[in-house]
Length: 284
Image (cartoon, rainbow, N blue to C red; front, side, top):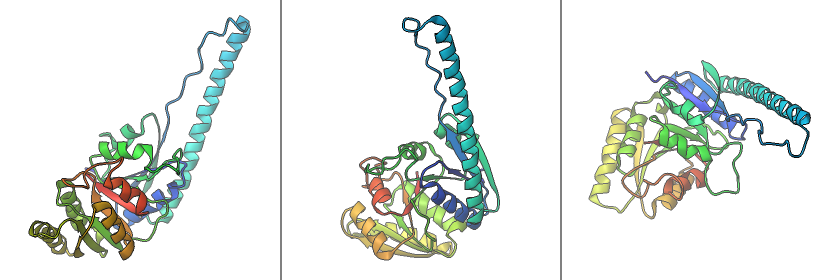
């Protein structure tokens, strides 16, 4: 049974926000948190033939020294990873989590975060990692890989955590959007929060029926939910609505049956992740 939150932490400026979001989610859901930090694969010591430029004894000594340096780097990386996880654990506990475990791994982040052995109910990741180029107009390099590989919702944390009282659910009537509606209706995380279901579509009977169905599901679960049909393109209309209503969290399907379907590069989802400056809970 999936019953934990896996929060991916690194040395980026998003790490504190990831921990604070994890603490908030844990406090409202009762789930434990597993903080995961993954070290990259170790590069082997250089093995090219240097015998033509230095004498054989010196070459052997050099390779031994390179191997020793590689081992030292590995020990330092492990020590740094453990220290990072300890700091993250303290921050997550302080943010409201009751149970926090840490895990230090080496190799492929996606396999460790989304594999069968991980067993999360939700994955948390920052919008960008420690190696991200903040001038680039796209999210972090691991984000798309995590979202595509994950079988569970993925919460993409903004740079700073903000207390969450108001949620906008970007709705397009597709399967992933309905999955998001069902999750918001059933998860204790959304107890007592204000929910706006916003749809950017022509004002017609089909859109109205789809919105009404979503609202009925949410209200039947006791949610404070209202609907809003927006004019204009999905990205600009939804982002403007988030700012106008000062919503704290965006919930949306990562794949759908309309203009919100293309994840991630060059898509409406990308614009929402970057331009809204809000954390985003994605569903497939």
